[in-house]
Image 1: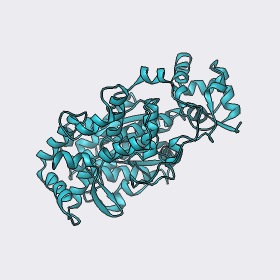
Image 2 (image 1 turned 60 degrees about the horizontal axis):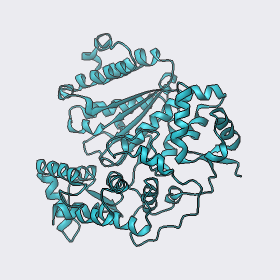
Image 3 (image 1 turned 180 degrees about the vertical axis):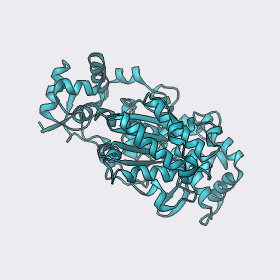
Image 4 (image 1 turned 135 degrees about the vertical axis):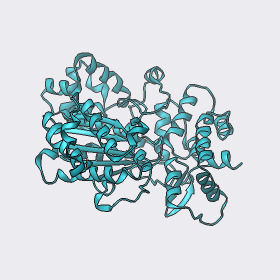
Length: 447
């Protein structure tokens, strides 16, 4: 057997159940074993672990390791996706898949079938990795002063990846904070100082600390809000917490809508990251930023967090990854069915998962799905109506999409229009050319 082995994905739920039933956390389990937290995290998240550690972990949980191990050489579809083109050429053959003993347990799938809505659980059986993105993020968040930037259109899996990065940080001993900027009310965006106070108060609340804002904002008229906020971190938040803090900021696009606030806030994030290169206390702060669009507001490059750190841009699923998702859902598809689905919805994770969910439940077959997909009566009806309402509220976006679909030459769209259409998942850029992302939108909006 190989020196390194991996937990079978269909056994993950049982392993997590055993750990949660006996230990307070994975960190607690690792300490009981005398192993590094990262070793246990790699084991639970189906990444390669030295066989000796794998056996010890299974024995501690009362499991027969032979039933739970699979050699990394027994490749699944996700392994192939590393070398597969992201251009979604539907005529390109999908690599054949070697036989593997790691088949998904149908009872596990039927008992845990998940409706694809919002962030996925960190231990979800239905999460399809897009290598090498996840592993690179897990490695990066272990570095002092790390900054990771996750970018992808809506419902492409940003929040799910963010949750997994925070989980990894937690397993390595960090205090983790998740903050969605969509949670801020309109009043919070009345001016930069109010927003920065909301930001700091939200972090204090997450750390179970009294806000104490007045003490650090008494010189705001002289110092400015950014320096007060930086002072708040350095003299209050970081000294109060004796562990590294990983802060995950979701939906940061919200700030783009407020040009009087965005330069200050994004300048602050850049400063917080840069401070880690100069002073030890700031090395304990690690940032993960998730956003849906390109940055279309004017920001000084030297004051922007969007050109530093590790970029993690989530692509659409490749055909092998869609086939992997089908297998996880216990759907017996060949490459033919995969390509039929992808011709309609591309590799958009939410659209793919919604199709697999309904097919796995026997709500309909693939032919019926494709027939009704671009209609209000199909499984995408609610999703398409939501997109339609957004386009109705923003005629310039609808006009831009129509120009792109109907113009035989390259459409001339503004950067802002392109950015917003991309954030909605309606367009994609391939080889420098802007294109509609899939047939679904063309057939629904421009029949």
